[in-house]
Length: 157
Image (cartoon, rainbow, N blue to C red; front, top):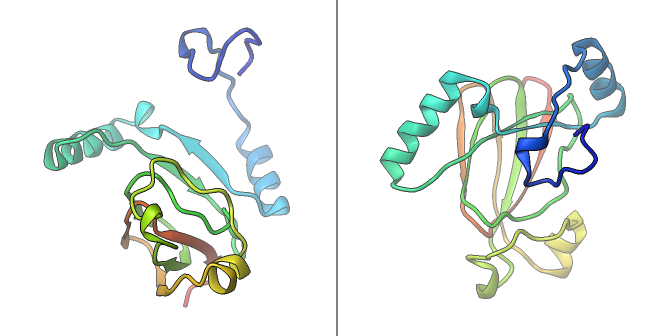
């Protein structure tokens, strides 16, 4: 965001810069950070078309994000979202751990959770581990709203 007077919701005042792929990959690989691409459907007709089909099928609005996480890294701490999430794994492999909601009040939350530690989820909150699975290219995983989840990138099984 180059224009200092713009707010996060004011897309009309944005100026875009093109990032150097070599700089991005060297920083992602060495820092083990996840690169998050917001709204890739605004820049790719194939993704836009897929989301349009999903909106027709589900009868509601859908959106998308893309994440690039280096091998042997975790993109996010355990957390839950305030929306249903479908994960389409395009490349590489991830180990996903999915836990039941901590209580009935958080089964259909209106806000996403804070980041938890694994100890909090498993010991302090006593959340039941429902799934511990590996997904790879072409696999789809559904995460209901309010279900705590975390993922780590792993080498090919």
